[in-house]
Figure 1 (tube, rainbow, N blue to C red):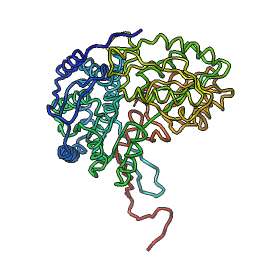
Figure 2: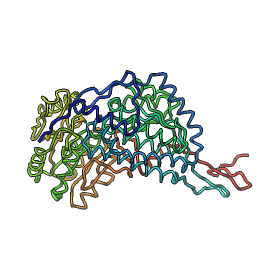
Figure 3: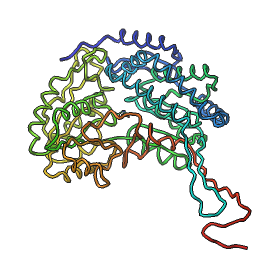
Length: 508
Ligand code: UN1
């Protein structure tokens, strides 16, 4: 059930070969270290962006904005079209780097690159659809209209678990909206970030757009904080933990900047007695154990009707026992490594706390490959039956732990779904239409994503992505999420020969 882990030299060679294929170079120097969770080793040192360089990069993006905002949106779309082409052409190599740095299995790494390609396609279409409205004016001879204008520099802060897809959601949309972008990726994923930044740079050169429409900052938290505090940055779009969002949100607000936050999730799936278990079981296993439990949309809480709980749990534990855990490069592996031993330690702590709160581990919870890869963290996805929704269940632990709770009445299941601080994703498996509609209604799931008969993770880019409460309220990616990247001007044009005041006010 496990597969041998490659040596660090093989991983390093794969990384270098992938970078070469993309054509990206690694800035030599120090300050940042590329690593791989596959072995837990360091790959090589690279130059971090200095504070002065960051300052200059933000200045360049601000300067480039002045021209980019006046470039017609469909022309801006050409840049994103070319980026999409280059991402398509480099899909394999980029996926390889995602596996090296984030530990994703091949199919999920390819899926992540596909998500970038999809959002580029979406943004190219959007470049011709940045529609404003014409509104009925209450005054004769007046026209009331809305126009959407480019906003400014967008600071994108992204996390290790979707190292490049989340960048693309923001960047493809921001660029067609006429903004310029300064990207601070996770310090855990510098290589794939360099590769994507290189492709965008190349796309800009090929279509004749200024390269300064996008700048990359490599570094740790201090560089991110510079971006957050810089008044030249109009919007900070940050993806990461609720703790990070709590730090960023007020700082951006203090300078009246805008922020778009996509933070932690604590996603639940309800399994009703009528559920088709042939759909539900694979949906649950993918959502809970896929990506080694490291998606913000990962399924963390299963709320099962009491009558079917034993059967569901039994079938799930059987499926968990068969999960191939190990080398993410191997075709049939389904669960790769956690990002770090610190993540494994937080999983261990959460399991210990759940036991203290009355939980019983039914499957997994142990470590694999500790002798072969002592610096890596291969964890067995765990299923823990809980007597109730205790403190540990209400927290997001970024590891593959699925807490199982039971319910008797559907309303009680909805209440449990909503009784956590986070509000990202949710789903219900049911063939009962009333239940499905109840779940999706105003007093149903309080999450930004509510699904029926599929799991909580793996959203398409066409919808707006994000959630409520401690998830931060931001929406990225498809639908009308583009509006967060633009400023709205409301315009009243008087084409009559009289000055009429609104609300029938008379003056003079
Ligand atoms: C994230 O984990 O930060 O819906 C993003 C999903 C993916 C995106 C997840 N499309 O699971």
